[in-house]
Image 1 (cartoon, rainbow, N blue to C red):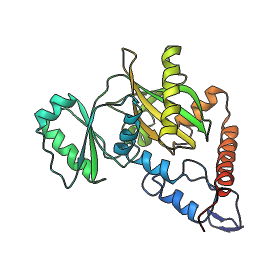
Image 2 (cartoon, rainbow, N blue to C red):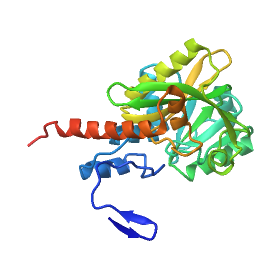
Image 3 (tube, one colour):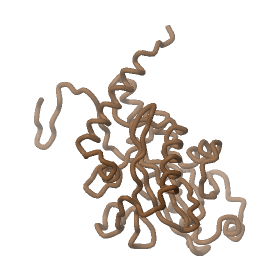
Image 4 (cartoon, rainbow, N blue to C red):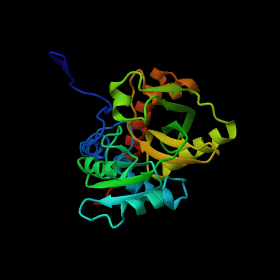
Length: 278
């Protein structure tokens, strides 16, 4: 082990625990790198990571299994939008959201309330991706569920994000300590909570996740809900929901980390036992 200023270089290690968010970190690129070097790692594999990074592809897979989703329109940079703003509003209502298909942490996401803002939002989202989503605004609680496991995943108690500002933006998540409040467990009727938790586990398996993921929902006042997105590399900071939800479920932070490492090692051993073509 060699120390260079604040950097420690290890001679050997047992498993990789990636903390690189966004592009190249949780989209399958880093996972493919680990795979190519036969290194055990924590979290979803290449396919699950790539699928969940692309919100459009995630929706296509979940839709096949009738998972409730918000209505949306997918737009490619090289294909002109063949709908007027009025037609988009007729389909999705106002306000609406515009977001890059492949981005996280609400980067490039805009809330739209008028036509001028709509065109600004399209331009902003296309700075981050060649494919974007125009999505209806779902009015209700922002609810999250932590999922943990490989072949037989479990769901935590639910947590609720209560944005202090207009919506849970990048600034609210990372720059403003008072940008949002959390409520764990969320105050939701037990039967509805169970439905959301079951849907979270089902979605986790549909998109080929293993190890961990945070599944985010919107819960309407009439108790119906839609799945918003699946985050394959949730945060582990002092304000992050994933470890807090497991702590409220009875799994301590240290036990959670140990379990994630064990899941990564178990998958590595399982997959290495498979035969390959010769």
